[in-house]
Amino acid sequence: MLAAGDSLVEKIDALNVNEKCGTAQKCEEDKEQLYKYITTTEELKSAVHEIQNALSTENIIALDLEGLNLSRSGTITLLAIASRSQVYLFDVLKLGPSTFDKGLKEIFEDDAINKLLFDCREDSDALWHLYDVNLKGVLDIQLLEIITQATAKVPSEWKKRNFRDHEIVRLESLISCMYHYHKDNDILRIKQIIERKMKLQKNLWKERPLSDTLLKYAASDVKCLFPLYDTLKPDEEEMNRLRIASEIYCNSKRSMVMRRFNQYERNPYLPIDIIPDKGQTSFTKGNTKCTGCQRLFPSDEFSKNQLRKGDQLCRVCKMVKSHTDRQCPYLEPRLGPVPIIPEIEKKPEGDSNPEASKLPIAMSEPPQFDSAQSRTYDDDDNDFLYNDYDDDYDDRWNNDSDDDHDRYGNFRYTYDCGLHEMEGGDGSSEWQYYY
Image 1 (cartoon, one colour):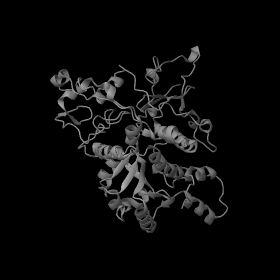
Image 2 (cartoon, rainbow, N blue to C red):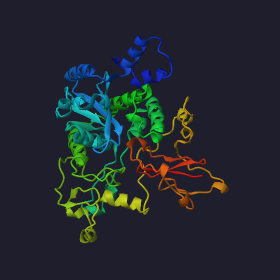
Image 3 (cartoon, one colour):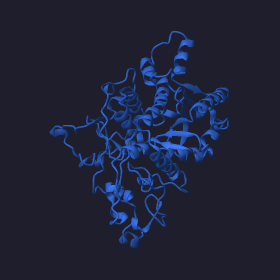
Image 4 (spheres, rainbow, N blue to C red):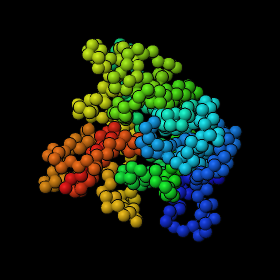
């Protein structure tokens, strides 16, 4: 158990994953201080009992899932649960459906137990459709950040809804919130190191055995939700709106009969009608479906021309389409970019992958090319525009990714010969290889 005031990341940083622990017993004791890795039914029962005891003291836990294409169409490989004093990592690949049969399902579905998550949409979708777990009692930190920190978007009552584009809010990533609110460079470094590897190894969380580095990453990812919650802790009125918004957020994707996994489902903006206005607890009931996100809105969310043509898009989906059509730039992250910790630019020791040195690095300024390697870029759109290289496209590096962890808000690229990443402001990226 971690003592009061101990920093999980300080303990993580103090351990060298390639360093011998001295004795097997000492190594296991060190690991247990950071997390408990659950792989057997006996360990599962014991961990659930400890979580239930912790909930009797403080009725709150933090959750995070890791997996491959995390959603109803993907796989949950690791479940991280944290109390304020301990992190539990459940290996869902090894435990299978029994992960939720020993008491976790009841905890997850208990609306009276507060559960901290960061962007619960895909987690909720995966839990419901893969394991029949109806996640409830969520307090979403991504929404909390908007409620307590974002500049109020005051509705213009004299304008129809479809003219209120100023109300659109860009979502902040977990790594951005941790950097700007908690100022913890250790966690930032851990996340950036692992995310470098995840760029090229999409099955990283499916490989077994999991490395200590990956387990430490998962532990820090869920543990960091507590200091964020404490920093952004809402008052009573904000908490009421957070509960309402989190319930809508949690159900937004899992309630879809069929998912399309397109840009309208995955983009960096807060969907319309998620967080109630201050003093409100509900939204005007909708009767017209957006053809993008498939949600119902009042008819004045759309223009008459859209309704007449039958291709109506809500304000967020309309903005997403304009990005796709290159008609306007993405909204800039409110909190600004996240810097790269110097260590991240060094090639990891023992890295045998020849492409590892070409992993994309986030920077605040565009690269300087000489005339022989001239390329054009659009800094406003945070996206590369290659002019004369279409014939050199190589499908091996087509890798569209909407992972929230990558949305630093930085201009990301590699500019040496070989592997290049073109990334839009929505976090999606297209990797291309040039010879």
